[in-house]
Amino acid sequence: MTIIHALRRIGLRLAAVVGLGLLSVSSAMAHGERAQEPYLRTRTVQFYDVQYDKSHIAVNEQFTVTGKFRLMQDWPDAVSHPDIVFLSTYSPGPMVTRVESYLNGMPARQSFSKLELGRDYDFKVVLKGRVPGRYHIHPMLSIKGSGPLAGPGQWIEISGSKADFLQPVTTMTGIQVDNLETYGTSRALGWYAVWIVLAAFWLLFWLARPLLIPRWIALQKGREDVLVTGRDLAVGIALGVLVVAISFGGYAYAKKQYPYVVPLQAGTNKVDPLPKGHSDIEIKVTKSTYDVPGRSMRIVAQITNSGTEPLSILEFTTANVRFINQQSPSAAGAVHASFPKDLVARGGLVLSDARPIQPGETREIKIDATDAMWERERLVSFLTDVDSKFGGLLFFVNPTGERQHAEIGGPILPVFTEL
Image 1 (tube, one colour):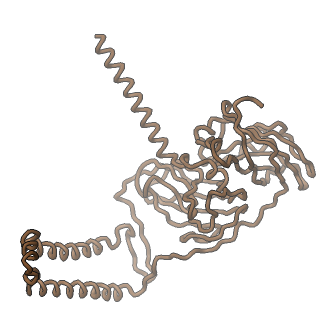
Image 2 (image 1 turned 90 degrees about the horizontal axis):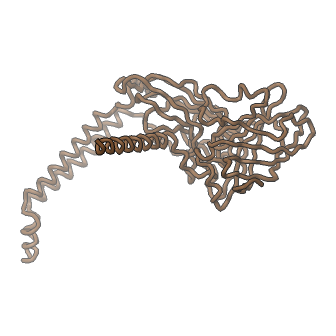
């Protein structure tokens, strides 16, 4: 009985280890963006106001992702500037298909060039369910030379059957295509078959002949004339003529069948940033530390309100993680219902002085953003970077609920004891 109990304990421990491993794999599959360095996620692109209009859809049903992003002024030197960018979404494989996308209202079918640092852009992506399952979907901005930068991801549940997926389109000449995903597949397979048959014939034609040893012996005896016979030459010429005839014949047929052909687009578009929003805030960071044991980022900043209305700190966001000041009257509606709850810090934002900053006032405020998400999102490896700096957006709100935001950032020092 002792052996049986021991085996049971071993089995339970193995099951627990396997279960934890599966959970880790699931987490990694859902949050691959955590593998990126913090300076990429905190000092390049800051996504905000991201919304998903649906979280449960069926195959062929559409959903929309909207939001904005700021290209940070304090762009890291080690990262290529956003001279060429492409707006898209990230999912674990082709589980959804993109129907349309827009950047500042312009169609985003192609890449955009020369986006400006320190400015904001608006995006919209319409997607359609393709493969049933539960997937983590992110808006994503890919930058040439730097790679993809993902926004906050949401779980999307897709029901139905993959066999029911359709992608109907109408061509420029009015041809109705029932499913773009399978359109032309049989024709492509037919051409593959033609070339495979010709290649197989040519290979078998020579394999049926004496191969290496007999031909080597003929070369040793100086009888190169017997290596290629008249029949070999005739078959080679005939096959060459047939290949050329099929190639030009196929081209002529395709040209007649499809007279209007649009090549793949390789050019880039230009888009102006959103108009500069009204901002009455100036921020100067005088000190910033990260309390390693306490998992807390502490910032001391001098904030100046140059406007005509009092302003209160509402939110600090960085790398898609949001810290909300729960003492603000606008805190209740600060987070949209579709925003991922796992990216909102439970502890919120703690301020040394939560009173509104009056017009013309400059006040030093200590900002404390404490949560285990710093570790979970792997945002603390900046402590070992050669350029240890942080970045983010600080949102303010006036008495009528109108928001303003400004960049905040600077060098950061890791500490292991209370300073």
